[in-house]
Image 1 (cartoon, one colour):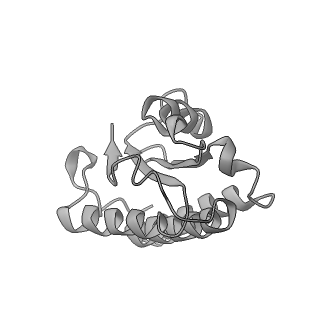
Image 2 (cartoon, one colour):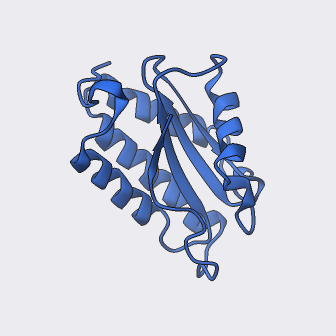
Image 3 (cartoon, rainbow, N blue to C red):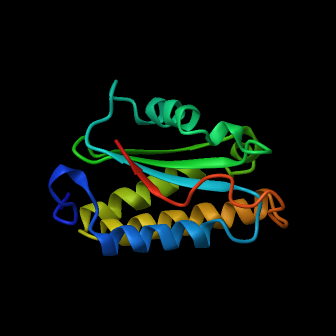
Amino acid sequence: MDWSWMRPKWKLSKEEESRLVAAIRRAEEGHRGEVLVHLERKCPGGEPLARAAQLFEQLGLRRTAEDTGVILYVALSDRKAAVYAGQGVHGAAQPGFWQEVVDALARGFREGSAVTALEAALERIGGLLRTAVPGEDTRGNELPNVVSVS
């Protein structure tokens, strides 16, 4: 994979971060869900889905009103990714949906289009949320629209 889009210390450029925050905002339109992107260098424990579940709890996604949070997790050096969704969303996805999102993300990274791949993954997640938990978000933005990094 081409990791040149990342600066030393695994930080996004201001432009890349702005693009992803805008993609998060778009992914959160038209439904009651919340979306978070989390990037880190290595995946503690080596299991990306377990790490995504751990971060889901630590970063407060479980506390959304209807447990409708989704975290898109990427361990850059380990080249691992996962999507973890709360109970209000998880069962709404067709079998294989989450893996398809991760596979498309991996393809984008391999092709040197990491930020574009992350934007596309967020678009797919937003589309699922519009189907799974449609309606007006009366609670507002329960989590900040940021790319978290550890």
